[in-house]
Length: 501
Image (tube, rainbow, N blue to C red):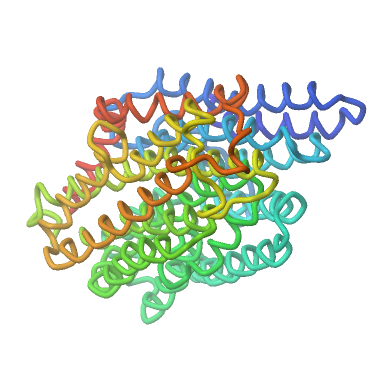
């Protein structure tokens, strides 16, 4: 049996265990080993890409064996275009975040081990196809994330870490109760089998009057994770207080776990319930798009500005999904495939741009001795032109400038949403306007104008910092000009989604 998917998940965990055992290893050795094990995700993800058949919409490289026979629980892993996209994203963002965040932390060994545990857990979420196994990875991701924020975060890190865990565990409790009801009704937790039952309407019939309550429970668990407005209140504090590397991973990868759950679980299992709720949910997604952007515009803390920007950008994905769910799939063509393709591209592209922006804010904070206010800088472009140029590219990618990766996903989402819900699409453009205002203000206040006393001695990027940021910037150009590289991975999957009976 092919064990490639298991290797993707467990090699980072093996690295974490090795680091914990090497108690006398120096900081340089620790960072090198940690980066090597983190890069394994990208290497193994590319090997998976080599064995992947893009023309097939179903799961590939499947590993499926009995695990807990008495509960009909299977160790079931599988890869499709959606999973592969997020595995590759993790393989790119993970090493960049680890390299960016491990240089200025105490106890390099513990930091790197926790980071690798978090990376492996996120990969398990993207590859597990049995709810029991999936939920184990889902919950395990909270533990290292909590300690990364709590131990290496800012002055308010304790409160932010507790809030992050309490919100997420609270949502997960509702989801766990929902799946307990599903198991009692149909006797399986396998996503593939449940999706077939959901498409046929058998799952809803088996649940009877509980179907709506189960749907709501699963929805709450995923909505908190994304987060969907108004469940977003934990996010700004967690992202702002987390150390730079953790912030990069939280926004670049972990925020995609919730969107992934909507696409992998909620939509296939509860199509009728989601269709009924979507006309209301689309307004919550719209609120995330618009209010997230306007909240970012009001921030003076650069890290909180980027955090609210993440609420705005991830909400575009849910806006597309709910617009498709609210319509008859066939009636909306080509709007439905466009919206869904845009959502998948947005997940990947936002992961690159948001991680890069958090990295840039981290550079500003480190160089200035902890300052990260919008008005704390000025003239950085004169002192550090390379850093200014690369950060500007990341900002314009997040803004959606044509030619960079951020444009493609947003364009397809708006094309689809305008075809399915024109009024919602029109209102969502307010989010685009506010995004342009706060990102351009960011660049103007920080990088232009006269050089201040704080920025006069601001040094440019080191070789290590350039090695972390430059690949992200290069991919922004690559996927902005050639988005079909990514789209080719999931086009058959989107076609299958939009032709369901």
